[in-house]
Image 1: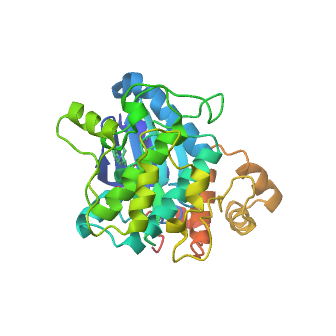
Image 2 (image 1 turned 120 degrees about the vertical axis):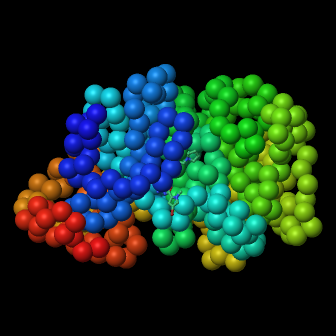
Image 3 (image 1 turned 180 degrees about the vertical axis):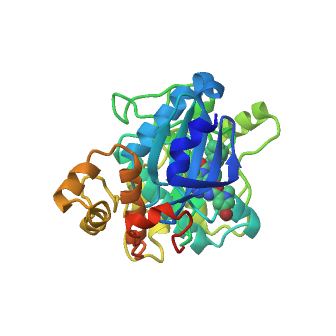
Length: 347
Ligand SMILES: Cn1cc(Br)cc1C(=O)Nc1[nH]nc2c1CN(C(=O)N[C@H](CN1CCCC1)c1ccccc1)C21CC1
């Protein structure tokens, strides 16, 4: 099996495991060429079994969804038995743990996070995707305390567009919409809005609106749609939650209405900017120039190579440079000769 790791080890220094889920584990790693930290999600195809399509779904989705509030997929390495996804590293961990540590968030902080979640979800809906597993465990904090959405294994891109109904019941029960738990057909976007309502409730209250140890009882509570309104919730927060946690999806607030909702806009100059700042169709010329120098190519040749989006080392270097660029840092790639001296790169 060690040979299966040869390619990934040639480009990354794998460190401790920082997460392990059903069929995958995530290790912290360092990109040798740049010294940048990354997260490597490792899956064994034999253990995946009929979950393998979920991984393909996630890879396809992450290749298409490139956004400032979505964890960037840098590189994919597939060997005989393994799939390695090299993904943006978020040193702040899960939003779930952040809420638990603070008990609950002040309305202004909840609003800051909620606007970032809206930005990511409005973008994926615009691209024709529904996430279908929105919860605080799937939102990570980067080192600027900004949120990044992860886990697109359950994402759906209905062929007939976002009006199309879906029927696979999936996601985490406590965040699942009533139409989803009652096994009816549902629209992905409408179900995501409900889940964001549960998420907002968790941010503001520190506990879930619908909760029970027995999943059947939990479902009954979701279908009734009744939840507690703690006294610390403002009228504005209660009104917004009421519009998001409408059991009838037709009466539920839409994404368009959410983006301009007074509660969402309060204390912020503009509406939520959900367009991507890092779309693949307009390359960052400074990153291309830096790469051209590093690989000894002309800018045009470098541009051509990057736009093939092979999700190999080239794609990884481009996105690592870009993620630093958008944060105002300039990542310098050392001359390639130093590659030989492992761990040589100053961090
Ligand atoms: C927990 N933690 C603490 C610190 Br400090 C950093 C982290 C951390 O996990 N950072 C991090 N950066 N980038 C990633 C992660 C975690 N991570 C993840 O993809 N984490 C998910 C977490 N899911 C939430 C519910 C079920 C599993 C995961 C999926 C499969 C197996 C293990 C973990 C990525 C790769 C995208």
